[in-house]
Image (cartoon, rainbow, N blue to C red; front, side, top):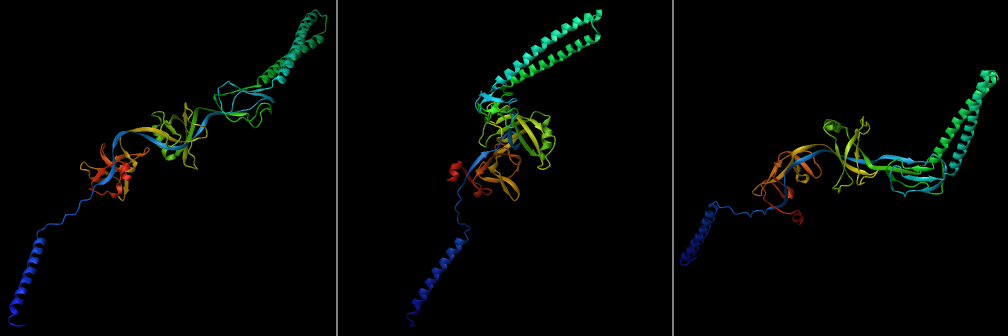
Length: 382
């Protein structure tokens, strides 16, 4: 390099060093300023919520029950004969004393007339024997006839008197057999399938009944509960009559009301349950014999219980908890102790106060301190 070129090269080198130094100082100054880059804030989590409420909650035992007829009668004929008429339709409601069947009465009317004729004949003979006995009584006292002859007259009159008594019994039996030609309902109830139709020859006390009548007002509902509940049932038994509700389906909003009428005297050792029975007036005939129903036995009432929907309660490693929404629309995790669960709600024994809002949907994205926005359930699903 010539002496002429050296000053230009040195000048260029000094300019590059100055630019590098300025960039380094600017970078150092910006690094020492203490300012951190701002991170974008997370959007609020959409949730649904409900406020914890305070109300009286029934203490109940739930079970599956079976409806039984209050009474069941298998109607049979006590005599044999031709069935001349059926006075009801299958499935018809009948009252006690309503006529159900008529059997041909003519053979029994003839038997009654014959029995009455025999009674009249023997009654006449008895009257004649009594007159003769009185006459011979006078003669034997005067010594006109032998005592032996008088004794035969007295014995004959006594025998005829017993014959008349037997005839009267035969007349009563024939009259009774005639009444059996008309069969009446012994209870209020509903008829089932008809076994014999008009024109059939029926037998007395046949194996198959002519019809079965079930009394469905009132009805029984039989159910079993675990033996562990027996102590609680016995505890509240003396306080009042237990109220029972029978639900024909899960969607049934108007259950049938009844009361507990029977507690079995022993626990079933094979199942570990005890049998109970409720009586239901069944005025609307919603319960039917043989039907399975959901039963709720109310023992008592828990006053001023804190209630939340059951699906608001979550389970974790440390037990059950709920997300409580605070006034600033942030959430906190609140450990709770949940008690009984009547229906779709749960009783909170400890951890919540009435009026506090809890999250019912949208739990998966929540964490302590998360901001939320309360929306409808339909909006959450979108």
